[in-house]
Length: 185
Image (cartoon, rainbow, N blue to C red):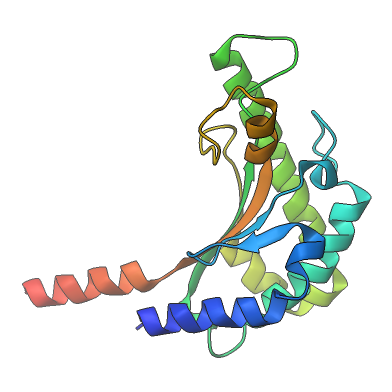
């Protein structure tokens, strides 16, 4: 069973692995083991789903090590899913209609996470784990539905809300559900 101790161990392992790189990548590790890439000027051009060269370089440094850590015997059985989550600002050039902007940004964020996933799976260093990755990594475009800055209309908030995150979903809740079902019988 995945325990909170295993989650703490995984977070510590992530911090140890990436602590020297986070600043230069403008990235951070959140309390739930999510790795957030914060600099929209590095990630994608406005309105584009094509990865910028610097983001390709960062992903090439990050992802093989991330995969090696998560597929290690210590953690492989605990990982249910790795979610690549793309987030946009609430604005869309050419419209002030919030609904239209939301759906245009949804389309863009989905295209961005898909192109990110395609690039990651093309990396030679992760090829040995390709089958596992196909079963566990998903691309999720979330538009502006999860802002991290509450003032959605300021330029600073718009920038802060544009990001790519790698979120680990563990199978701990599945295991807890199984235990609960067995206890009910």
